[in-house]
Length: 284
Image (cartoon, rainbow, N blue to C red; front, side, top):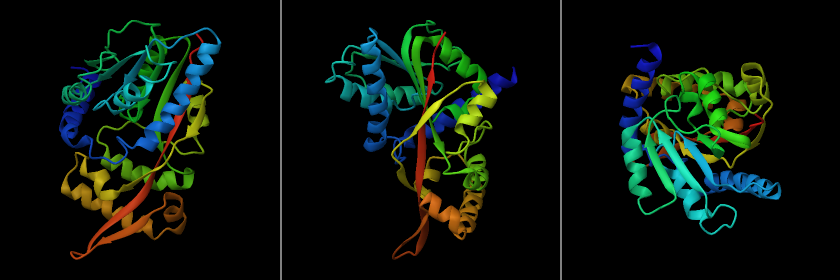
């Protein structure tokens, strides 16, 4: 078995384990966050219509429990530009797909497939736009995943990659140690609001533009609650957060607040989960 297949098997196991509690994460179904994503996509749809293209099919890569598809199916059914479009979601985790299917069982314009971006067998040049929300940093071979997404999108289509970011490079250097501990098998993609354009230019020779999305306030306990980590790792991350709380620059940039829950005097932290929507034009 190749290393890539081993990595995929590990990720499948991890996300099968995370599936049942995935929707408890505060960012997953946050309506302001999802709404901001939709605004940008709808603007793209309007621009396409002005050029004679109608959005017919879109793909959600790493769809998870289907919240993006669920939101879009609820919203676009009343929007002329997207009312007839078909959404397809793919995910490596069969449990994630099963939950997504239960949510979207009544939608006739959504299809869900248990597969990875590397072996989807979907038709190339067939999607008007592609979404990849909070999955890109999990791909063992992001270069190949991006190549596949560009092949799947039609010419003059768009790829929207949504990723969490640190406010700047200073905070990223401190935050990425926690990310590495929390996300087993994570690749080496670590983004801040300062390095996005440089990262995609240096690694993929791509010019991108990005929009900072509505931040989502999260409790550390909520964020770690869905992580597949040991108790020792959890304690180590909490100790790291204790140190970061003393860093005034980090604390202010992340909106980090210490929360004490009475009467048990249990300590927790609240922080702003920042994300960006990265736009990649498909020109060939």
